[in-house]
Length: 240
Ligand SMILES: [Zn+2]
Image (cartoon, rainbow, N blue to C red):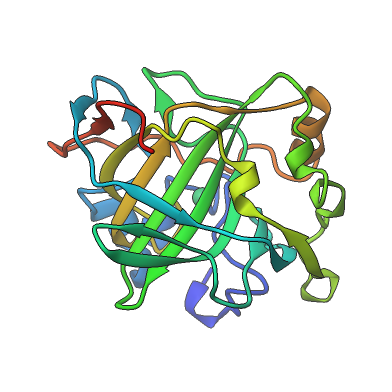
């Protein structure tokens, strides 16, 4: 399969099956080689973090009109306009999109969660920061009611749902304590230099809500990668 010749946005040739999954991403095309050779890859196992006074994470999210599509590998909720951002160390990172994995990609001391949500941000100079939150089964989560029933079950550009109003801040756990480390995209091209911010507190969803996602995607998670000497930090106290 030649990935370079494919329209990646419509029909990505990478996936999670034996012939196109995480074990072979690095061999699909030269652009994905770092998936194999990178030393700062994500996800990782979150274990034995070092408590630290971390730079304050400031949220500037508000209600926005978003578009929802099935990319072939996840459900992606995209922000067509800037206006939602986080700020770390006086750098603004604009929220581009958020999406989901089932089961989780990161683990805590070797334990997977039912799902994981990733909010992908980019600064003016192209630096990426991803906020991740674990999702575990529990109570119904009404914050997802605005769009959970709209998730397209097939990958098709024309089935994109447009103009759904939501505020991503409502989706996050109340406690904003975080793990932080430097990693990569967890999907091809596995680019490094990504600032990872994982919420220590999971959010809950009902089993029916989790099942609704798993009916579309189950097993779209990359296995954990070696830490290779990187520092894993955790907020010494609640952030905010
Ligand atoms: Zn992701």
